Length: 161
Image 1 (cartoon, rainbow, N blue to C red):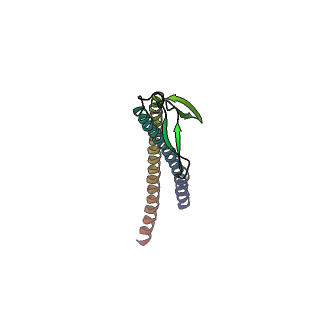
Image 2: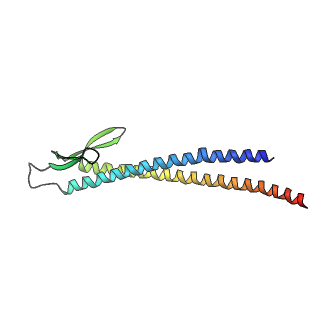
Image 3: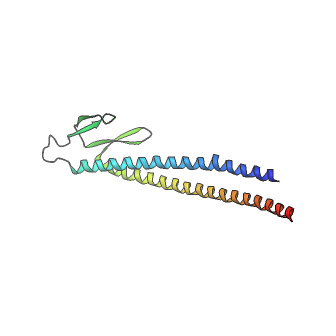
C-alpha cells in the first residue's frame, strides 16, 4: 500500500513541477512581454505629445523640420534631421507599419494600450488560477503524506504496545 501512495505522491509532484510550474512561467513571460509593449507605446505617446507641443508655427519653411540625435547602437549617436514631422510610422502588428498623423497616432496608441491592458489582465487571472491549482496540489500532497505518516505511526504504536 505504501508503494501505491508513493507512486501517487510522485505522480502529483511530477504534475506540479512539469506542468503547473512550467505553465506559470509561460504565462508570466507572456505578461512581461505585453507590459514591455505597453511601456514602448507609452514612451511613443510622450514623444508624439512633445512633438505636438513644440510645433514651430512662426517660420513656415522650418515648420515640421526637427534636428535630433539618432542612436545607431551601443550608445553611438549621430546627428539627424527629420524634414517632415507631421507623420509617423507605427507598427500596427504582424510586421506592418502604417503612416499616421500625430493625432491619429495618439488615438491608435490609446486603443492599442487598452487592448494590451485587457490582455495583461487576462494573463494575470490565468496566473492566479495556476497558482491556486499549485496550492491545491500542494495541499493534496501534504494530506496524502500526512495520511501515510499517520498509518505508520499507528503501526509503530500497535507494535510497541
